[in-house]
Image 1 (cartoon, rainbow, N blue to C red):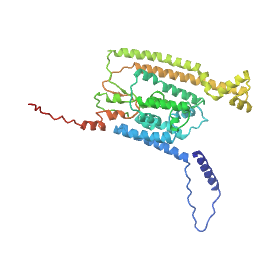
Image 2 (cartoon, rainbow, N blue to C red; image 1 turned 90 degrees about the vertical axis):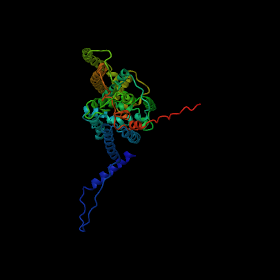
Image 3 (tube, rainbow, N blue to C red; image 1 turned 30 degrees about the vertical axis):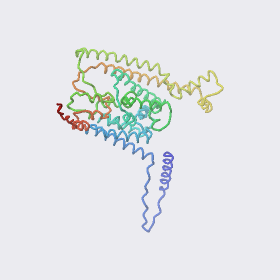
Image 4 (spheres, rainbow, N blue to C red; image 1 turned 90 degrees about the horizontal axis):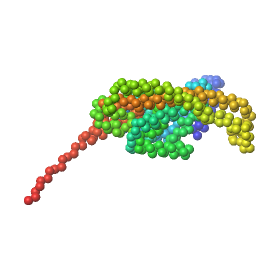
Length: 438
């Protein structure tokens, strides 16, 4: 209904504009024409509301986390985001899916990216450069929904978390690959929460989303940490953010923040128990750096050999394979795609040429994608090998999603209301009883 209403409104405005081309009659009585006010189409109005609310909510989170060091506003932002961006707006426009539109616009001059989609992609990045991942804190409806249902965060081993952390980068690279080749927007197709927000859709994806929410009860944000491609992208910018989140300048190593962090973004105190010398650590990292190009080249070759299989995601390549199969072994009953192809006078040479061009593009882009995946794997190995001594607990800016849970548990945080209240509770000593036995 919104689209129909918008179209009718535009037609009405167009007709009114056409009528104004002719000169108005000149009244000698001093009559003045009333001013005309044109209503903004509904969808345009909602997009403006989306963008304004996006900026307002990110600003609230930034103020609460960076300046006030309190969690309560972040929680209410999560509620608003799930209600509005999730259920009311059905999870669209989405900053995560906007990755594909931006990637396609960068390689295809004929594609015009909608301004709203571009802003949904850029604004969280700008805020991340300034204040860290405030978008992930509670403004993203996907992350907010997981945050709301979280009750207990069981810790995942560092090595397993590092391996699972490679998946978002692979997802990001494949999403860009399929977008630039005009094959598919896989982020939108396989969004595990869109079916929940729209209360319907593919049952397999809805079930996957429900399983993720169940996992979110016992561990912090599994989708954000181990699947979200936009979160992987924001983790790069959060490393160089101007105003970084800090627990307290006077850490007393009480471990409370470390235990409560749902995404394991706080690095614990580390002592060099194996007494490894600095030279040994440097040699190990240099070895990984030497092997890094080899891993990258291997990734490029592997994905290049898989390019023909990956290219079948494009409809023209799939149609070409069907046409070749039918030309080789004619079928009595044709698929709808083949019926459309032959019914419209399709030429085998033309579909062969189009499919060849697409497969060639896939070889080129797959080579670069494989090389990038190799770099991600190599840098992950380097990150696991780094063993830096720490005397206090420190925040990993790349992993931190600015949820502000740690503030409520830090006894050194002056705004920690829970600690202040608990410190005022003084247990009264039991009165001494006298033994009056004869």
